[in-house]
Image (cartoon, rainbow, N blue to C red; front, side):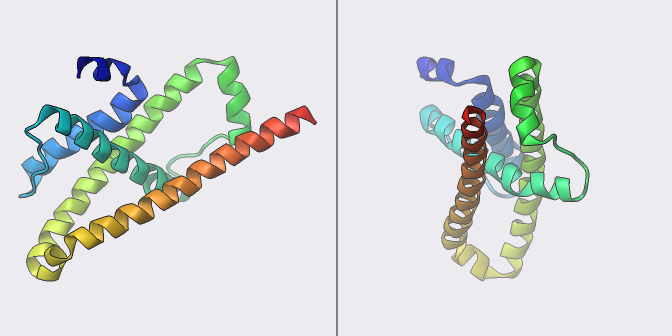
Length: 165
């Protein structure tokens, strides 16, 4: 287990494991829900997965919403790549930026859990269909995350291809 934890990058630690564990702790304090895992190994993987889900929600939903509201403005991706090669601090700042976005997403997910808690008491069909709702929601989230990641890869390939020509 110790070897596994030493292989986790700081990005994975601060953008997946930490937010997942934080979400579980706060969820238990703020709602009647509990996702705490007693098994340490299972807990690390589960909290990592929760953090991954929360991070993707931040990437797919929070980031575009904040862009639309003009709370944040991004540099052009084509400018980011060469700038990050020249200034190594940009990559570190980007990692921290992603952590803040993920923490925004943690708070939004906690708000969603409070809403879920309220409506599950009002409408029992929510609890009765929870598994289907979660599976469909995660499926949609990961399709959207896959589409976004594919667009980033395509942009990098196109930029690389255009450099050679």
